[in-house]
Amino acid sequence: VKFNYFKPAGDNTADRVAMIEKAIDEGYNVVVMPGYAFGEAIKETAESNSDTTFIALDVGAGDLGEDYVVPANLYCAVYQEELCGYMAGYTAVKLGYTKLGFLGGMAVPAVVRYGYGFVQGANAAAVDMKIADKVSVKYVYGNKFAPAPEITAVMDTWYKGGTEVVFACGGGIYASAAEAAAKVDGAKLIGVDVDQAGIIDGNYVKGMTVTSAMKGLAPTVKTVLSAISADKWADFGGKIETLGLVSENPDDNYVQIPMESTQWSDGFTKDDYKSLVAAMFKGDIKVDNSIEAMPKTEIKVETFGNIL
Image (tube, rainbow, N blue to C red):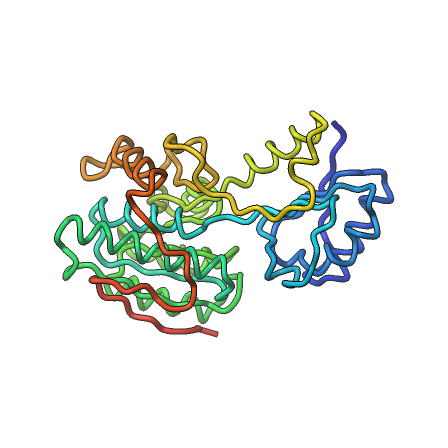
């Protein structure tokens, strides 16, 4: 299958539209776009290119406009970030970390769901272990999806003040947390969206990444492209689907933490994680997906708004 990677020249709708149109002009008839920022570009191109199939990851109704009618040549997938955020928070506390941090990019719904799920998971593990009075979370947004000296400075303060692990959630913002963590012996990070252990550990300190809260971006693309090849696009076109748990088996799900790179211990093993996922899938463990207010917890949560 002929494919190519088209990168917009700039971070704006006009450049995204131009690159989508360039791909179509060159004969590509399936366009895959990752990220909510493609919302406006999709609205400008999908309906006027009805012979082109569009697959949008992390693009939901809020990004397209509540009154937008999804055309038959577009499929949008969004994810239950609160679920893998919960897994990451639960795992961190079970692995023995008690002073946690959450560094979000911008307070868009996906990031907030990650953060609130993380807090819920940390709280559940602390309650299970009867150490809720010993576990705390510092919670802040950088207000951008990129590193910045001001964000690094705050992370310096956190790590030097005793924060053990930070869930860095928002594009390149992880670099600010990793730069600060590299200055403190034993400081850790939790990655986001994909398994970031290779990226973070490779660029900073080996063993820095405890785990990652992952979305099944690759499985989504493979599933939909396979459907297109099998002439089953009708099962997807015209829909916005929220993807999450589809099985008790972690590897089958669209939200998970990495089985291989997570730093398992006697306190929390692969089998313990599988049991957690099974309980979540069966509904024995429920995670609130509301983004209206910080979840109520027995652990201490300090919120700091936006850094920038």
